[in-house]
Image 1: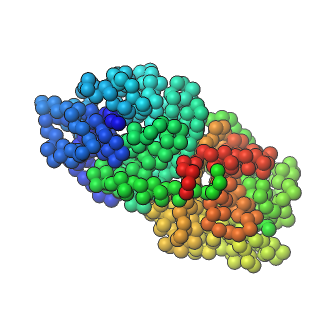
Image 2: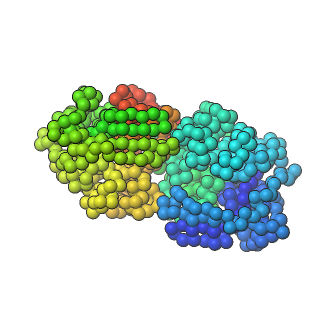
Image 3: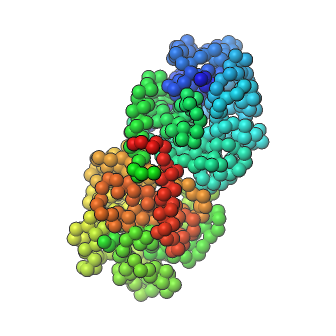
Length: 304
Length: 304
């Protein structure tokens, strides 16, 4: 089983109340790929510029990540992202010190990757996302994430892409905005009514909600005892979720619920370090231990 | 078993994106008492002015609510509260058209109510709260809620009161502020380290977290399919929770977890109408049905 992961590989400057890092490996695809590789084999489709440091590439070289799709455009710059978090960590200022090559580059699926069994497409232009979905031969499960920029700039294309994916992952504020509904439940229902098959609304520290035509699942947030930097947590969530689903024997409602808890578990590790830093050392055993803790933390009735 | 409930009985003006009400029955004690009376016998200790309408008093006259402690100060005005909610319902502007008698009135426990088996003290001056806690003979379980005003104005007294209660209930933004910690988990741990026995951090639409020295429980939010007005939901949560606990045979960690889900369930009904309106018609059967749904919505592993 192989999971296609797309999105940004970037260089980040991040400041939180607990410290700061400069020129650090970042990007949505970086976080999603590292998270997914805890569960399955990953194919990373992304781009960097000629300035992308060798040591960052080395950090991505891992047994379960195929970097054959990490393009280098020598004459271009790697995209750079900056963020400064406020004290409550729920709000941040962001900026782009260098928009870089990720903005204009069009991801094209290598022909020998068309047999990928799943896809996790981090936020990107919805036309690029739908083209990638269509280029896959027969994926068992696909996920598309998006951000405010595409809700604002390309709402029509975005809606078409969200209908084409098996799972839509979206932040709660963006879900409310896109669906124009005040509650999480109503926003999720509205997106399903608009054609999305399955919607996962990411609630950050507060967990996630899953809405489909047939199921509704609410997962609380894992207690963040050592929160350092929320950057990349949403991508780690999506990557962990899709990594788990890609290696599941069957994709059932029960497996999707477990996958959401696995995704939350991986995300809860991600926030313990700057950017994807904690994911670089995270092991499957650590994930399994915390997954079991998660069950104990959420349990309230023996019989079901 | 009898639960003492204190707080405000007030007259509200509320505007949400879905409508507005004026001169409507409201107040923290109103919501908490109505919620608790679904489970146990309630003693309501609060004050109104001579202008308090008969029909509002009639609305509070219920078999399981003892109004013997609802004082009327004829020459004073009932406290009035106003709120206008923004579209996402998570932010609101509030004001006090009439500060009224609740602000200056000092609640005194009637001697024949000292045998109350539990107490649910909605936000109020921490000195009043601790005096009430001390006036009780031998309560099995007590809960104290608070708000930003008391964190700002009387932090020392507040900390003493929070140490005296069995359960501290507090909103997440207020918990972060009081504990000066960025995550829910860290804020809860810090309050426990400061002497609180059990802390429940209320996450609004996102559920609740329970933190003690021995246990940690995270409850997601029940999907709010028909959200009309969040006013009073936190008080309904506390009232439902304490009502359930008061009638429990034993107060165990498992019962506290169930109580949190019962509280969330009652709160999820509360938001379906303006102020306490939905609570006036809510039945225990409706609560039980939704509690069972809640279990299905949160379940992700059969074996534990």
